[in-house]
Length: 179
Image (cartoon, rainbow, N blue to C red; front, side):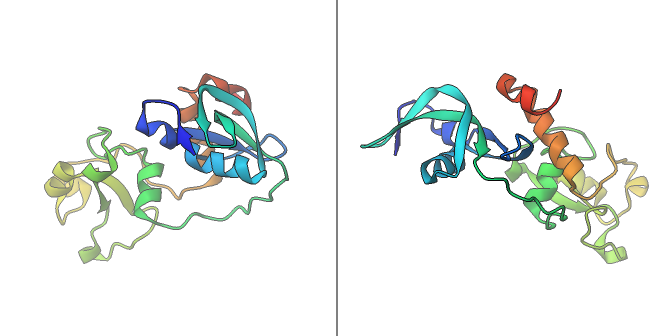
């Protein structure tokens, strides 16, 4: 499929994914949403003005899609990964509270590994290079720094909270996110 629009980032824009019961369960990129639509496992609930064309089809670019069959979502913890930590912390340095791109952030161990700090949700935070270098191999109070938010595991509540924050900029998501 080729896109009939000038922005290359359109296929990366967020799409709200609803379960068959209209419960918000995920946010994916337009590209993934289009795959689900073409496979026939989802239906477009809200669309933007743009369209994507192939030789045999033309699809509106979705903003909200709904799965056609109910999917039971296990209430598991997400795996600890750089991406999940950055998403949880909203790509914001947890010391200076400035938002950065993913390439400009590092992961910081609140309790340094050299002092027994583990790779856990509660000990890893997004951190800019400047703050990470300033903190070094010390505890935040020793470096005269403090965390803006206490790190917590990525949970269903965290996921819903992030969906709502994204929904603040997406008018057509609001009715699905129970504002």
